[in-house]
Length: 161
Image 1 (tube, one colour):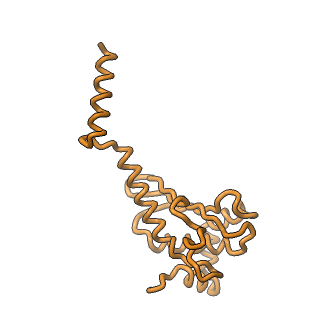
Image 2 (cartoon, helix red, strand yellow):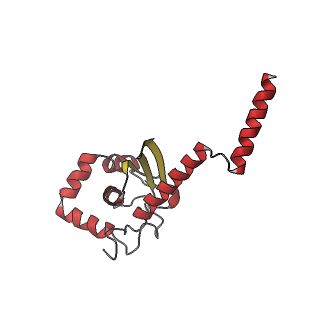
Image 3 (tube, rainbow, N blue to C red):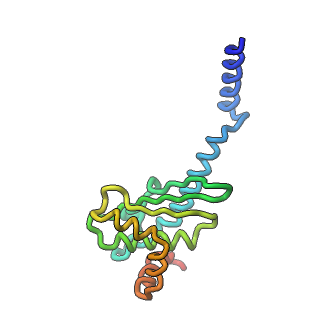
């Protein structure tokens, strides 16, 4: 009898979920994380490459798939970005990571923790660069350099700003 009751209960729950009468919490949470990821992508897609006239999106340095968002707590999120430099020996990969950091810190309207990485196997010194771009002290020191700050500003400023 207990088995029959469990099966009936499971069947009713599934029917209600599929009919839309009951919302599945995980489906809503997944949808919310996907929406947050798109919001993050919309912020970074327009960052310009430091040496080309193109955006990171146009060069496929960033794509929608490179952004992952996880919920840490109520209205707090972990954002993980894995970008792909255009060539394995790109000398500006650290600068691109810095641009991503700066633009997201300025533009995201919600509380977040940020982790930025070079996609595995896409750069010859990815480990070293990953450490640099996720070190808050190094990022702050880099932004104190007026020449570097000017380059970052040119990359992150929207065309109509």
